[in-house]
Image 1 (cartoon, rainbow, N blue to C red):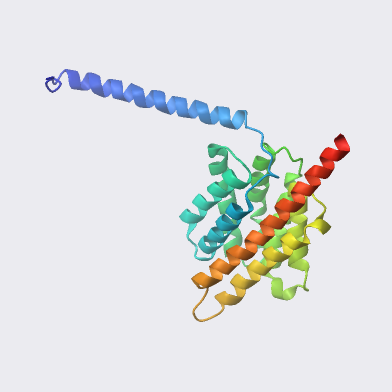
Image 2: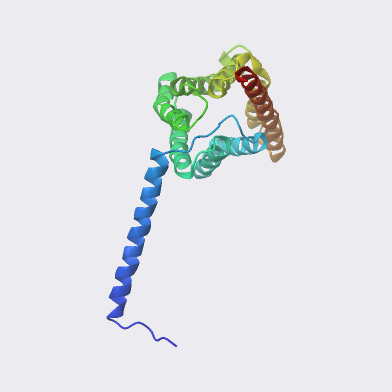
Length: 240
């Protein structure tokens, strides 16, 4: 049976452990740099509607409850699931998206809300860097901020403005004509309306309400996935 290390041996062990930690850190930094420098390409038009609906519902709950840590984790999971991002890029972009949401949430005017735009531009630039779909990241950022603003001011807008803003964003991201995305946009707007309406009750938004919101969001994302699949088939037929 081996005895305990001598007093002289302990510093040697500490030095070895230190070198191991340095090597691990250097390896991790090298992996991270390689991941960012040579990102894996991704087809963002392929996603699981049910998982996106589940995570979006969870994100809304965290956002309105101002629980930023859970929101961040949910954003990371969504970016990996919906946009197929590698871990480090997902964490980096989740930070930008969370920052944009936080800036917008506390804003009291459109000028305040526009302060979120630089974060959204960097966010969509990061997605575009790996996306096989050639969307315009600057336009996507503006459209994202546009629907946030319309939703915040929904009572001051005519019916259909929120749906149009949501359809325009999805059309840009997935390169599908906006007029084909009204089911997707309409159901997302409906889910938002359920949340907004129930939040005004004395009891607030109940668990059954969140279940209904998730179900409506599933219809929204399933409609988008179906439309994207049809467009991809049409594109393949034209190339054949």
